[in-house]
Amino acid sequence: MPEPLLSVRNLRVEIATRRGMLVAVDNVSFDIARGEVLGVVGESGAGKSITGGAIIGLIEPPLRRAGGEIRFDGRRIDNLEPERTRALRGRHIGAVFQDPLTSLNPLMTVGRQLVQTIATHLDLSTRQAREQAARLLAEVGIPAPRERLDNYPHELSGGMRQRVVLALAFCCEPKLIIADEPTTALDVSVQAQVIELLRRMCRDHRTAVMLITHDMGVIAETADRIAVMYAGRLVEIGSARAVLGAPTHPYSRGLMASIPSIKRRSAELPQIEGNMPRLGAIPPGCAFHPRCACRLPRCAHQQPLLAPAGETQSACWLTAGHEDVPPAVRHA
Image (cartoon, rainbow, N blue to C red; front, side, top):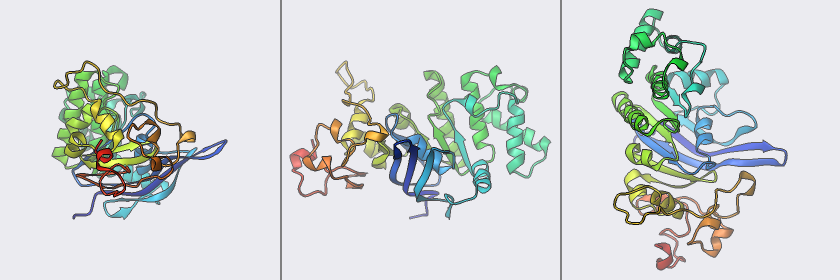
């Protein structure tokens, strides 16, 4: 197997509170291959965004990375000095966030922001950087790109601003993009355009993507593999076809059932009862067991680890490979 572009092993992120340390991300491990789109899904509070932020060094106190190892392109990056982390983040790892206004400086024109980023990381003159900035705006579908270089962010629509953020993310031809809810703040029609643009840019530039979202429709359209998170833990990971078509973890099955389908006769979508636990109240054993209709006695006190389960890996006592689980219960 070729070496993955990104390898995360046993990542642990803690948050300091007046009552002590709470665990926000607990022992998470996964790989992303070159050119692959890994969709990371789960409800709000599952730890998706914190995981992405920890990878690129964008978590601040009271959050802290408390354990684990992160390797990018064959070298370890979780122990780099802040300046080297910033250089890596600007040149080789791009980021796209939910609200483009948080990524763009409102006091600078779009062109100046692109030119500064390009000139900082690439050996180009200001004129060459401006030419590349105009080409990038054209590539992301912004009309009259040379004129738009002189616009400020507030002069653009939300969809246009997100396209500018994509141009910023790709301007130095990074090997990896961390995309955190890149379409949530957009209208549905614009969401589809941005997702198609992200897919095309990744295909053309051979860029890997960690796509963080709670939108299962976006994941179904975009991801090659899917990682499902719950309460800071990874509960299932596998190919998009397998996780979407035959998920093995009860939480994954609940998420997949929430995707609207024209084939479903029922007028109501199935729902998962209950809520995601607060960080200070994560139950022992399997964190999902209070909401799980298939729970076993051991689920309340023994935490399952990821193990092969059909075509995916699942952290569940109900999956195949546990001889003490009755077949009728295992496949419920």
